[in-house]
Amino acid sequence: MSDEEKKTAESEVEKLKEESLEELENYREDGNAENEKMINDARERLNKIFSDLKQWTKDTSDPEKIKAVLENSKENVTKTLQESREKAVEISNSESFRKTIDGTKDVLEGTLGLISEGFKATGELLMNNPAMKNAAQRADERMDTLRKSEGLKRGVDAAEEFTNKMNSTIFGGLRNLLDKKDDGDGQQ
Image 1: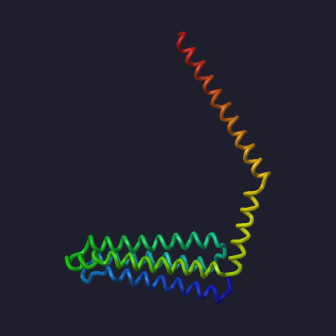
Image 2: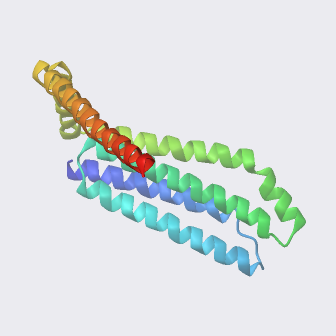
Image 3: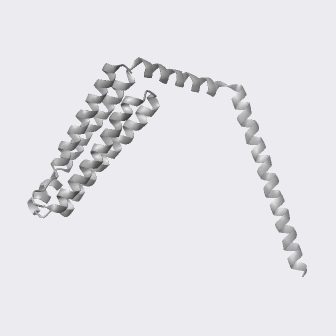
C-alpha cells in the first residue's frame, strides 16, 4: 500500500473512531458516577479497537485479513455502543434521561448503520489498492486451480476411502473384543 493510501486509510479509521466516541458521549449522564465509569471503560475499549485497527492497516496487505479485521472491528464497535446504551438506561438516576436514551434506539441503529458503512468504505478503499487487488485475484485463481485439480480430487477420495477402511477395522476390532469379553463373562 502506498504512503498516500495508508494515510487515507488511517484518516478513515480516525473518522470512524471520532463518530463512535461522539455516539458514546450521548450516553453520558452528568452527576452519575457509575455512568461516568461505564462511559470511560467503553471509551477505553473503543480507543483500543481503533488503535489496533489503525496499526493493523499500517502493517497488513492481505485482502482476506483486511476484510476479517474490519468486520471484527465493526462488530466490536457495534457491540460496545449497544451495550453502553443499554447500560446507560439501566444505571440512570434520571427518569427523563432514561426515557431519552431509551428513545434513541432508532437513532443508535441509524448511527451504527453509518459507522458500518464507514467500515465498508474503508475496506473498499483498502481493497482498491492494486497490490491487494492482485493478491486477492491470485488467491482466487489458486483456489480455482485447486478446485479443478483431478489429482487433488483423487487424493481426497483416496484419503476418504482409507479413513473409512481404518474406521471399520478399528470399530470391528473393538466390537470383537467386546463380544469376546461378553461371552467370557457369561460363562463364569
